Amino acid sequence: MITCSDINTTLSILHNERKQNQRIALVPTMGNLHAGHLSLIETAKANADKVVVSIFVNPAQFGPNEDYAQYPRTLDEDCKALTAAGVDLLFTPEAKLLYPEGTEAHTSVKVPGLSEGLCSNTRPQFLQGVTTIVCKLFNLIQPDIAVFGEKDYQQLRCVQKMVHDLCMPIEVIGVPTKRESNGLAMSSRNQYLLPEQRKHAALLYQSLCALVQKLQSRQASIDDVEQETVASLNRQGFISDYVSVRTQADLKIPSTETELVVLAAAYLGSTRLIDNISFTLDR
Ligand code: AMP
Image (tube, rainbow, N blue to C red; front, side, top):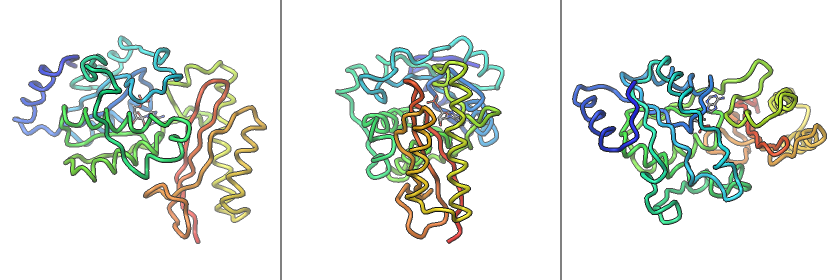
């Protein structure tokens, strides 16, 4: 695997690959890699000739009181995992290279509609920061395909709409969420959890499973199960941010649609967890 932190070298390597008609996949990450990231890389390998992974803790997507400084940075371990996974090129730019004048002075990409509500209520800068950096990475790397996790469902939908609206010739592939054996969605932020909290955190997924089951067996309305789940998470020691059933296609409040997704965010201590489950509701 070649590791590269400067733009010109990266561009010239990729130029050569493209000249040889190599199909390029990009997997953007913030590092501290786990099995969820590795499943994205497997999908990338299955759909392209060359796999590029980026590791960049993107300051533009963190709020002023969020965990940018503490975010786990484990480049040595990540390099080993990526080499073992057969990745061809690792792009590790410094923040100064991508935001030479800082993040505030930078042009940004905002996806209307999809980037509003849900995570944006508590993290107003997050999705705009993501679509801006992903747009930049797409312009630099010019991948044929890009792979994202369904774990960050609102993010995936925003990236898909950005690619569509801005006519980017890139196929965006979503990969199902990789979970611990107790159901907890894998996440770099799980490292912030104490061992006891880590066990407890699986209740978020279990609560969403219970919500889906109640809806599918017609025991309650969408509004009722959302409220019940918020209350039950709060009783179990979480501080719920939101629990919301939306349409899979465009994250709208459902009316008669059948392809739905329940999305949730909740704090356990100071750690913010997100999760979602896609499901079908017969009407
Ligand atoms: P991050 O490094 O957290 O920014 O994530 C980089 C990519 O990995 C994003 O597309 C995430 O959606 C994806 N990802 C993170 N956790 C998981 C997981 N548990 N399963 C599948 N994909 C994931």
